[in-house]
Image (cartoon, rainbow over all chains, first blue to last red; front, side, top):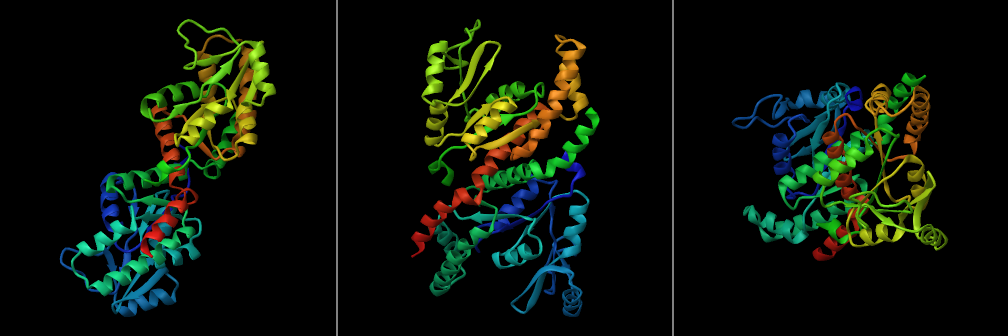
Length: 207
Length: 207
């Protein structure tokens, strides 16, 4: 197959808070074990059961700031006093090895990645309806009414970001969403632009 | 799901002679029974076991010429003294009903369809190598060496037509090729452009 000779794809999976990005990604790890998952760097402390290089690359604040300075991050953000970011080297090495890598990220981070990696495949995970999104947020049971209203308003703003993405995948059922994402990856590998170099070598055979 | 409310897709499956378009389409009928298959009109006589409206719409030459005059064909061609063509109405009605329709067609016909239906999804079936293509043609056992050379030269010209297609699917294994075609259809339904109308209705909910 031609695509083995090619570079891998960076698939950026994003979508509004509460849409189920994490659940989809967990299921995708089972359904698409050939995919590599981007590992973030963070300055927060490891939680019980978290492993260096698997869950995160754990860094001191000094180390993280040094990565920022040396432009070693595809994107980064500060959240509740800690840094989180996507090491550029891990993504590049995976792609150069011809493997596809998936990056699960909030919408703000996805837009930063798009600036630096426009050739990525940007997939937007959609709630089946905003009513459903509201239910999911409420059912977490950890937030006040004001907070819920605020998150819904943020979610509406986030959904408007769909226009910057290549694909939208409705998360009506997790397995279905995963199958759609797998299909998108397969289809992207079949795009004419990726196959043309292989075709040129074919035509050499016929001479 | 959003795509149910949308129009279906016209998928045009083409590729060089001998690449296995017919075999892939037969397998696809089993693996993707939800797809509608475009039925051609022809002036040739029905063969044993062929059924009107299933294998072909059988027409007299007078009827066929009248269809041409009334612009009722998406494309047509004359081959060994008979007309073959794609009735426009069958394709349009299927798409309007929200169903996807697949049209298996030679490369010349596909290019004619593209002129009239640029919004179609054009999939080019590729031989794993031209050496393999040569083997397949030889193994039919019905042709002279000159004929084989001629067909290979035609095939090389046909493969150059890939540049006009959206996707290339390598027919290394029939089931694999079918799965790739199914993935392309799924991915096309997830394209941002198709989902945007659904999103607009979502955002209405939040106000």
